[in-house]
Length: 527
Image: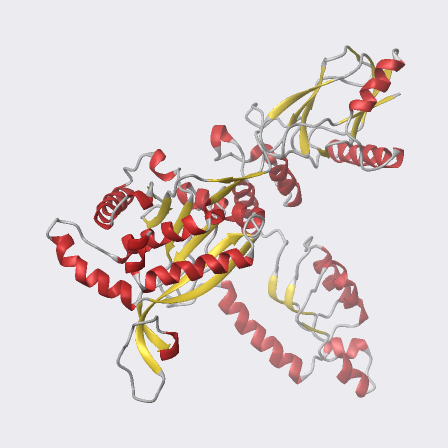
C-alpha cells in the first residue's frame, strides 16, 4: 500500500489546507492525475498522484490543514517499483504509522462533526456558491473562534479572507449572542439572592449554557448544591457568603439559605445598585463609539503585525547633542529662503544618515529570504515617513548622498505635500533601502519595513540638560558656574535593527558615526 504524503508546495511553504478532494475511496487513478486541491499562504495548487492505482483511503478531510510530509491518502498500486521510487522522492513525515493513524482519527472526528451539523461548509465552498479564498492560518483561526469561514466576506485581494475579517465576524457573532440573551457571558448582575428552592437555582445556572460567569452575586447563603455551578467557570464573585457564619451558629445550610445574613443583604444591595448601573444608560456618560477597522488603517496594521512576528527586532537608543546642526541650519536658512526653499533639520539628518550608511553598509542591506542571501544595496534611498490623513506614508528620497542640502530640502517639501494630498505614484514609495521616521517626543520603538533591515526614529529636537563633559569638542555653552550641566539642543535617536542580519556592535557603531555627523555637520564636507 502506497502512503501518499503531502509534497513540497513551494519555497517557504510548510503546510496547506485541503480545499477539495478530486477522488474518492475506490476510484482508480492514473499517475499525474489530480488528487486534491490544496491552498497555501501563497496560492491554491493541484496535487497530482505520483503513481497509478486505486484509492483505498483518504486520511484528511476538506478543510483540514496538513503539514508537508503528512500522509493524506493510501493508494493500492500494481507497480511496486514505481511506488518505491515515489516513496523515495516523497518528503519525510514526522512519525510512523501511528502518526498516520492519528491523522486518520482526526479526519474521522472532523467527518463526524460535519455529520452532526457543526461544520457549516463543505469543501471550502461559500454560502454564495463560490470557493472561499483564505490561507491556512486564517482557516485555523476561524476554527479556533468557531466562525463559519464560508459566511465571512473577504476584504483582501480578489475577495481573499484575512485574519481581520475572521475576527470581525467573531465579534459580530458575540454581539448578536449578547443581544439575543444567549449566555456566553453574564446573564444577570444579581441572581436569586437567598433562593428558597435550591433545585430551581441549579436549573437556572444549568440553563445559562455559557462558559463564562452567570452572575456577579449568585445564591448568597446557598447550601452545598451551589458547588456544581463551578463546572464551567466561576459563577459568582460573592458565593455562599453566610455559609461560614451558619456553621459557627450551629445552623444547617437550609437555615442559611432561607435567612441570609446582614452582610449578605448588604452585598445584595450593593449588587442591585451595580445592576442599575450595568443594566441601563447612566446620565452624563457617553456611549461607546465604533468605527470600521478597514482600508489603509487595516493594511498598515497587518503589515506592522507581520513585521513584528517575522523580524527579530532590537532597538538601540542614543541622544545626539547637536548644537553644530542648529547653528549650521540657522546660518544657511536665510540663503535657502532667497531661493524659495525652506531649510529644516531633515536635509541635514538625511545627509548624515547617508554618510553613516556608507561607513556601515550592512544597515543599508536587505534580506532575501527566498534565496537566503543578504543583499547589500549599491544606492542609499531613504524613505521618510510622513503622517497623512489615511496612514503613515513613506515617500522615498533616492540617491541621497548624490544631492546637496537645497536639492534635498526642495524634494522633501514636494514629496511630503503630495503624500498628504494622496497624489504620490506607487513607485515613489517602494524603493527605500533605509527608513527615517519622525517619532516626536523622546525615544520610540520603530518597526522595520521588510525587506529592509533597519529603521531610525527621530525624536523632538529641543534643549535638554547635558553634562558639560558630553559636549562635542569645540562647543562651549553657557551654564550655571560649577554645575557641570548645561542646556543644549539634543535629538533623541532610536535605531531598530533586524538581528538576523545586524549585530549589536554594528548598530552601536552606526549610531556613534551618525551622532558625530549631527553634532558637527561640517565633517560632512570631507565625505
